[in-house]
Image (cartoon, rainbow, N blue to C red):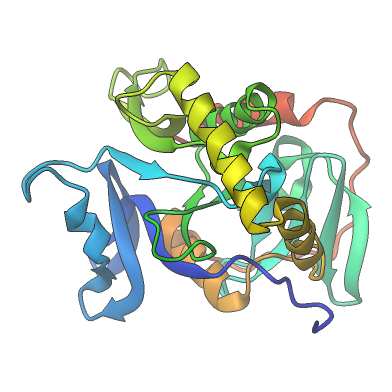
Length: 298
């Protein structure tokens, strides 16, 4: 295994609740009220739609607001990784990734491990350059048991909801998270900060048409069948854990550029100086620090 290169789940396509538009000569992120499933191929008008984008709609005019999925891993933190991430707004590379306690930061002196005070208390994070950044890998369909679709978000509501649901489902299923029939669902809410305008975020529920009891029975049955067939979920989780831990940053530079385009307007991409005194750590929790960012993200 190549050292320094994070080994991440194979990606067949991407899931988004927004798109990039061109306005006044600038490429700007624009939120949407439905899911879009794209391939990994880009054309002159943007990312080409994956065939599943139309297959999952009742008809071509319906908005895609739920996606039946399964998960790759039983460990929630392998399915969904969330960090505070500071991007270089010119190159799109991640410069600093932290969890509110410690961070890895790329400086002129190389990679350093430093305290992470979270974006609200970090001098480098001024201007919204550092955001909570989550990546969720899910399985859609049964064609490829290891080929996933990637959902990226900097939305506070999506990050908090997905993290909670994953840990809850792991608990009630007896650590059979990868066997549960689940569904990504788009929800809307209005807040004081949104001035009554609906904002949309991603939730995770049991699959439509079944209750939790039915979902747990299916998970138990599939777990039994997998074990009988020799499917080693524990080994798969461990392989993923080693792969994620093999690199300092999960995203490669080309992947980071996609995230920059999706979440930052071109007008905000000025250089960032990382050569400053490391800030002192604070004792507030990651959840509390994320709360401060609720007004900045969907």
